[in-house]
Length: 549
Image (cartoon, rainbow, N blue to C red; front, top):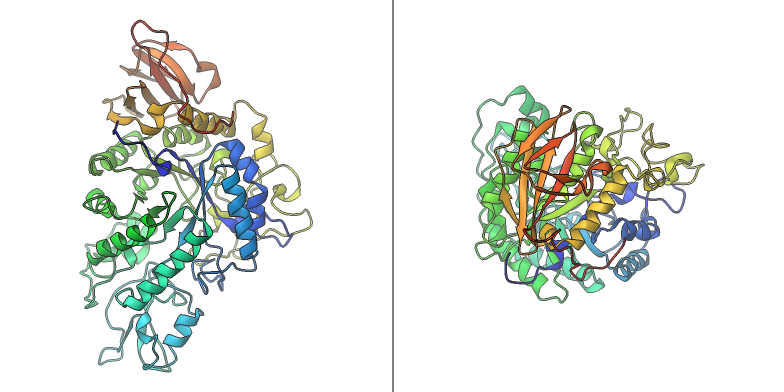
C-alpha cells in the first residue's frame, strides 16, 4: 500500500448515466435531469460513490448531445440550469459526487463560435477552428479519415476553404493551438467547477491536438475482415498526425493546474482508446500531473476469454506508473452491453461484475449493468444514432409497469424498451437475494468495508486452468484471492486457498471454508479471504466511508 491517504476518486465506484435514457419526469419519452434527481435515493441505496452524466447541454442532437451548441447551459429536453443545481445539491447531500462530460475537441456547427468563424475568412473567430485551402485540384487538404470513417474535411461554399471535423460534418474541430480557444474552453470548465461539479470526463481526450502541419497519415497493412467490421476504415491508416500530438501533454498539465486550483479534489477522467499500454499510460504524465484517471478500455475491448482478460488486466497493471491509479469498465454508451449474447452473455454477467468491483482501480458501472440489461434490437424506423449505438442506450428498466417505469404509461419512449423489461428490472431484482442487483449492492458494500479491496495492491496469480482467471489483492489488512470461471463447465483452481469464501456469485457458497484447491461451478466467481494463522478471520473494519447496508 502507498503511504498517502487515498483520494476520493481512488476508492470510489462511478456510475455512468446516459440522461436521455435514465428517467423521464415530464412524460415526453426522454429522460431528464429531474429524472436523475428522482433516482438519487436508488443510487445511494445501491452504494455508488459518484455519477458521471453524459452531455445534457443545448445541442441539435445530430450526435445525440456530443455536438454542443452552448457549453454553459442545459438543453430544454433535459431541463434547466436550476434543475442541474438541484441535482447537484441532492447528490452531494447523499454523499454522491457528480462528474460531467467535457467535450473539448469539437462544437456543433450551430455554436455561435462556428457561425462567426465560417462567416468570412477575416472574422475574428476564423482561427478558432481548423480551416485550410483545398489542394490545387480542389480536393481536401490531406487524406485523413474521421472517426466515423468518412473524410474529415467539408468545403464551405461561402469562403471556399475546408474545415476539419474528426467526427460528423456537424462537429467542427476547435483549434486548441489558438490561445483564445484554450482560454474560452478553460472558462467553460470554470463555469461548472464554480457550480460545484466534482470533475470532468474528457471526451476523446487524445483528439484535441493535431499535427500543426496536417501531414498525411501513413497507410496501414490491409486490415482483417473482423478489424474492418469493428473499426471500419479508421484502421486502414496509422493515425500519427490527426490525434495524440505530443503537445497534448502540455495542454493536460495546464488543465490539471486549473483543477488543482479548486478545493475538494476535483478529478479529470480521460477517454482514451490507445491499444498500446505505454501510450495509454503516458497520459498520467511523467510526474503524474496530467489526467488523474485515464480511462482504459483494454478490458472492454478484450474477448471474454480467460487468456484475453488476463492479458488486458495484467498489461494495464504493468504499464501503470508507480503510484498511478487505473480505471476499469466493462462497457458504456459506445459499447455493446456486457450481458448481451454477443459479448459475455447473461450467464457471465455476475462473473463480470465481481471482476469489475474487485480489481485495483476505479470501476465505472454503466447504467443497467447492475440488472443485466442487454442490447435491444432497433429497427430503421426507431434508429436515432448515426453510428448504430442505439441498442446499448435504451431506457432504464425500473419496474414491470408500462414503459418499465421509465416514463408515463401513455408516453412513447425515445427508444424501444427491452422485451424482457417486465422481468429484468430494478424492482424485481431488488427483492431477489440471488439477483445480479443484489450481488452488485453487496460487492459495493464489501469494497467499503474491506480496505484491501479499495486500496490494496494487485498481485498476479497463476497460471490457472484453461478458462479461469485469478489474482490477489493484498494489504496489511488482509489478503484476498479472486477466482473466476469464464466457462460453462466446472473448473478446479489450485493455490487459491485455504480460506473462507467472502462473497461469490452463488449465495450458498458464502462463508464456506475452502482448501488449497477451489472447486468452481460453471459461470462462477469467488472472493476467498485468506485465514491468518492463529485467527479466525482477517479484519473487516470499516474505513470511514458512509454505511448504506
